[in-house]
Structures are given as C-alpha cells and as structure tokens.
Image 1 (cartoon, rainbow, N blue to C red):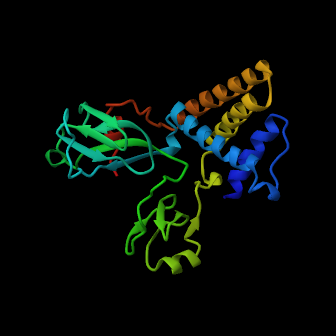
Image 2: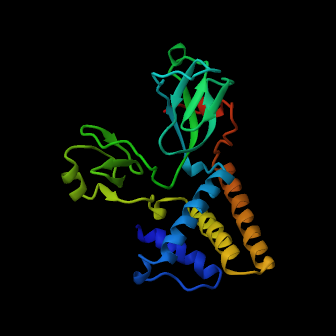
Length: 247
C-alpha cells in the first residue's frame, strides 16, 4: 500500500480522536476494515462533486456486440470511469448501463467520433488493461502484468516491463498516489473517511454533524476554486467541454 494511503487513514483516525495505524497493523482486522471504508469514502467523494482535477475525456470504441434491445450500439467506458459527465455529440440520447454507454449514435457518423467527459477514479479497477510493449502510457494509468496491478509513475513509451519497472516507471499498487492529487480532494477524502469512521466509533450526533458540515464546506471551496480556474461543470449533454478543445 502507498504510504500516502496510510497517512490519509491516520489523518481520519486522528480527526475522531482514535489512535493511528502503525507498521504492525497492516495484517490486522482494523487495517482491512479501514481499507474497505477508505474505498467507499473515495467513491462517495468523487460522486458528490465533479472534481476538475479528476476529469478526463476520451473517444469511445464501438463494441462488436450490440445491445439486446433498446439501442443500436454500445461503447465500453474507460476502465477508470467513476461517472460520465458529458457526451459528444451534444444531445445524443444514451443510457449508462454497467461498464457501457448505450446509444443509437454510430461513431463513424461524427468527427472525431463518440466521446465522453468523465470523472477518473483514484482506486485501481479490478481488471485494468494488460500491459503491452511499444505503447504510450501516462502517469496515473493502471495496467495488469503477471496478475499484479501497477500504477504508471512516469509518462513513457513502454519497452520491456522489467526494465521499466526497475527504472521506477511503475509501482505495484491498488491506489493512486494521494500526494499527486489536488489538496482539497485529499482533504475531502480524509474528512469523508472520518465521518464514516465516526458512525462506527462514536455515538455523538453533534460531532458527526460537525464533520458533515466540514465536508460540505470543503466541497464548496472546491467549487469556488474550479470556477476561478474556469473548470467545466460537466452537466450531461453540455458541449462546453468540446468547445474548449478536444484531446
């Protein structure tokens, strides 16, 4: 596990007046319990607000198997997609079902194709794509190699995996490094985790209410920050993200 992941758990524990984890806790029930709560906290934080620092955009690939009924085509969503914020072309009727986007839009009818603005996860997917050679990887990508999940630390074109691993371009992990994310997002994760922990560790409704208010205040600050930086709200169907430039 990443040290920064443990730090996030410890910060949450300290918020509720509990003792932090130590090196002897990594195999304990307490550690496994915190791991589960952390995963839920991260997912909830990413659902509660469209964090500008976690937005990505990608053109989708049409699946060879069409939907059984209702729509003509389906497209696999990015493996790190938490939720879809917008679809291009604007106004395209669609439905998100599981790991797919269903629609009547044929990507060959539009230039450059069918695309989505989406929110990226901070947690490795259960089945990331397999690592392949001669491929451009970007820092933050996850791959599967020899039944292990690796996080890309440095953007590079892959050569031999063992060589790239030795050059510290990859790290075995389940979580994205938290020291690489926006401070407000990390603060929100810590506060949400503390709120979830408080439900288990304290009976004080007042204290839990204070944590919830602090969390909502962090989200409000994040929205203000994104607005000052010109980040897109990401309302489904909006074309602002397209007009701002495609990648």
